[in-house]
Image (cartoon, rainbow, N blue to C red):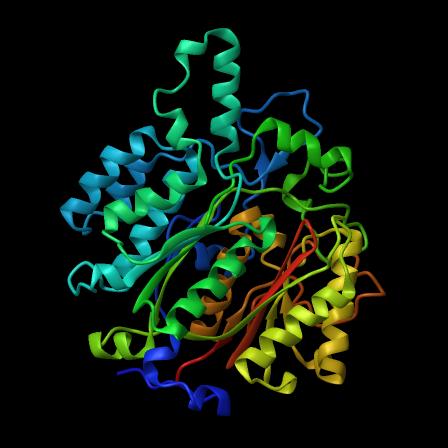
Amino acid sequence: MNKINQPSANNLLRNDQHRAVITGMGIVTTLGETCNEYFDAIIAGCSGISLWKDKDTRLYSKFGGDMSDFDFKSHIERVGKDYPLDWTKGARKLLRSASLSGRLVTVAAMQACYDAKLHYVKLNPERFGHVLGGNNLGNSYAFDNTLEFEKEPDFIAPLYGAVAADTDVLAISSEILNLKGPSFTVGGFCASGNLALLSGLDLVRSGRDDAILVSGGAMELSPVWLQGWPLFDAISFRSFNDEPTRASRPFDKRREGFVPSEGAGVIVLESLASAQARGVEIYAELLGASSTSNASRLTKPDLDGQVRAISGALQDAQIEPDRVDYINAHATSTPLGDASEVAAIKQVFGAHSYQIPVNSTKSMLGHCMTASSMVEMITATLQMKHSLVHPTINLEEPDPELDLDFVPHQTREHKINVALSNSFGFGGLNSSIVLGAIN
């Protein structure tokens, strides 16, 4: 049986029923459609960025993490051959009419539940809920149907009125996996995944649920979004159109904007008591989480809001800053964003900030938008499990103003006991979560 670290006096006051641990994970990205495939790719320093496969050539945006041709039937045949028959039958039925976001989230959810051994040890479905992080998820689906409406209104998708809603992405997984506990969506743009984790943590701590499926919803990348971001200089679209794998370059002097990407990540978050009663593997404990607002509509990062989010997560976890030994940075590759996050880390951690490896998953994967913080939390957990930190690629000309240990170019062995993961979203939304290792 797993033995959990006793990280703080605060958690010692919480009994095992009110401590939240990760017992299953699933992921679907351009770098792999299972956790093993994905981890092998990021440890090797691979890039999942390419030219768009089928986008309007008039777009300023020419590249990103494109999953538009994802084939869920092939994925299930390859990955889900041992899944329960009712899961795969349900997926084949429900995903035929689903949006790309619905397909990506559902197959990641099935992975996570299978990984958590829920295919043969059942939980009470009325105490097993689902929190989906994300908003505006099916925007490509909506865009395509709008074009169809312009040609002939009667020819839009018959189920458009249901499928276009974010709740459809939530409901498909809940139906297939028979989740009947508290279920809802949480939208915070780039911070959505961490906000969903915060909500799931609160549900477990309160005793409302024994387990929560926490999903980072895939945001489909429609042409309108991809044209909108360059218009206010948010994404990389000028310098690397012939070398898209070099475009996402956090902390580098030549960084010019984020690289949008598609993908989804899902975990099973379960009370420690439930996990130990089932005798399943525990990957890590979710020790704390925090969310703050800048009280501003501006997309410009706010140092104070980021500092409060990081400090709040550490306070919730009752972890002193000098106990953190790894940070998965938000690190989008924007000039202002990377500089602000480095300043926030220095303000919270002081001299210790120079002792902490700080890497950027987005350097390889791009920015998975509403799924990004969930994908990066899974990345942090995998690194914790294997005692490795992945490289930050494309750090070719380090910005002299940004001088922390960004793990350039090569994977490194590193024991992680306490990890921090940051995610800061448009609309002045900041979030951080803290993970603790198991013995």
